[in-house]
Amino acid sequence: ETGVTQSPTHLIKTRGQQVTLRCSSQSGHNTVSWYQQALGQGPQFIFQYYREEENGRGNFPPRFSGLQFPNYSSELNVNALELDDSALYLCATKISGGAEETQYFGPGTRLLVL
Amino acid sequence: LAKTTQPISMDSYEGQEVNITCSHNNIATNDYITWYQQFPSQGPRFIIQGYKTKVTNEVASLFIPADRKSSTLSLPRVSLSDTAVYYCLVGDAISGGSYIPTFGRGTSLIVHP
Image (cartoon, rainbow over all chains, first blue to last red; front, side, top):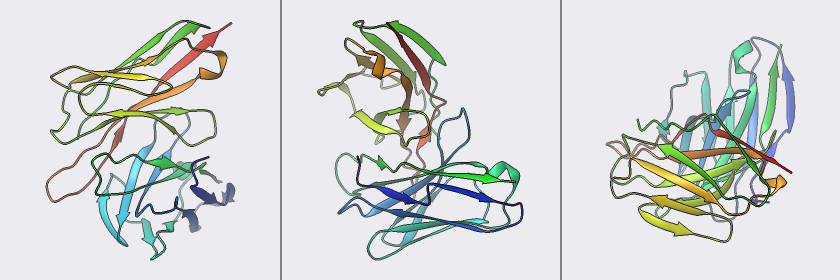
C-alpha cells in the first residue's frame, strides 16, 4: 500500500459528459501527477501540480484540467468526454525538492465512456 | 523529450535471474531513471531508482553505464509472483522547470514454473 487513494474505483459515462476524478496524496507529498493508461499501453503523463499550480503538462487538450488543494489532494476534470478517453487514470504523488523524486501511484480509476 | 525503448516481452523460469534493459538515448543531465512494476488493473509500484553506476535494494539492482543512455534492471531469482509489466521511466526537466516524465510501453515478464 502506498497511501495514495483514488475515487471512484470505476466509472461509466457517456460521450459528451463531464467527469471528476479524485486523488488523496500520501502524507507529506506536495506534488501530484496524473496519468492516462490505455489498455496495453504505458501510462501517459497528463499534468503535474505543485503548490496548487500546474508545472508540467503532457500532450493533452485543454478539456483535461486539474486542481490541487491546500491539503495536497487533487482532482482531474475531463470535459466533453470522448470514446478514446476510456482508460485507467492514475495519480502519483511525491515530495518535490529532494535529491531523488520517487513517485508513488494510487490504484487508479477505471473510466469507461460509452 | 527522453523516449525509452524496452523489449516488449520476456520469459523466464522460477529461480532464474532476469535482466531487462531500457534504452534512453536522449536522457537529460539531471534526469533520474526509475523502474516500476505493474500488475493488471493496479497502479505501478516503485521498484528502484538511480542516477549512475549501480544501485541495489532488497528486491532488485539497477545498472547504469557511464553514458547513461541505457539502464538494466536485474531481478535475482524470480518467482511466479514477479510476472508483471515492468516500466522504466526517465523524467524530463526542460527549461523553465517543467516536468514531463515519459514511460515506455513496458516489458511484459512471464515467469514459468
